Image (cartoon, rainbow, N blue to C red):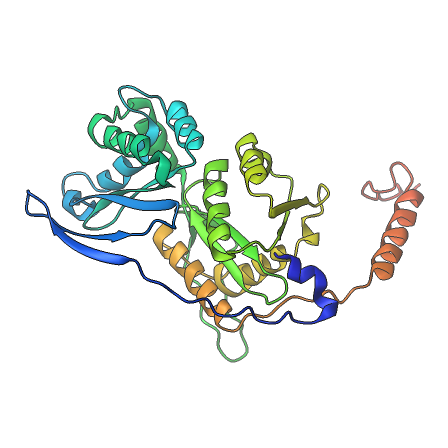
Length: 341
C-alpha cells in the first residue's frame, strides 16, 4: 500500500518518534431545553464531525413495518423538497464534506464530516434532510426491489459433517439471501488488511473507503494503490479526489490480470477459509463473518511473497503462446467415431 513497500530491500524503516497528545479544553454546558452537551474547543483542527441522532430504530417498527427505519435511512439522502439527489452530492463535494445515514436497533442517525469554514452550509443541508426530505416513491421501489434480489450464500440442503473415511459435504447449488460489497486494501509490507463492507458498489462508497485509508495511514507518506480497471475506480469524482490528495498514487493492472494484485490472494484466503463452506442466513451474518476474519487476520498478519520469478512467468507464457499457435481450426471439436464399412 505505501511507498515503504517499494523499498523492502533497504529493510524495515525506523519508527517515527512518538507525538505528544494534547487534549483540547472541555466545557460542560446545559442548554435551555435541558440538554447537556460537552464542548471541546480546538483551533488547530480544520475538520469537525457531527451526528444527528433520532431515538427510533428498527426495533420500534418490528411489528408494523419491519426494516422501515433502515429503508428510511437509505432513502433520506435521495432528495429534499428543494434539492435533488445529484444536487446534494454536488453541494457536499463543493464544500469538501461527507455525509452518511444509518439505522440501528434503537436509533437512527445522520453522520457528517466537514471543514470548519463550511460548517454553516453543511449544517443547513443536514437540517434540510431531517426536516424536508422528499422520500421519492421511485427510490423506495428501487430499494425494495434491491432488497428482494439481494441474498447471501445459503445451501439448499444442510451439509453432512466430516467423519472417519468421509469428508464434509455441501451442495453445489445455493439459495441467494443477500449480497454485500467488500472494499479491502492490503499493506504488502506487513500483510495487514483494511476492509469495510458496504451495501452498494459505487464511486460514493469507494470514496468513503479512500477517506478511511487517509485516516488509517495518516501523515505525508505516499500510498501506492494497485487496482483493477473497474469503472468505480476511474469515476470523475474519484479522479478529482485523487488530485486533491496527491499522496494517493493509483496503479491499474492490465485487463484480465487482476491476479497481479496481491490483495486478490487475500480474497482467496477469505473465500477458502471463511465464506466458501459457510452458510449465512442474512447479510448481517455474512458481514459479521467477514469482520471476524479481518480481525483475526490482523492479529497475526502474514505478508504474501512472490515465489515465481519474472523469467519463469515469461517462459510459461512463451510455452502457452507456442501451444496456441499450433492449434489448427477444428481440432478442438469433439472427436467422432469412424463409420464401419
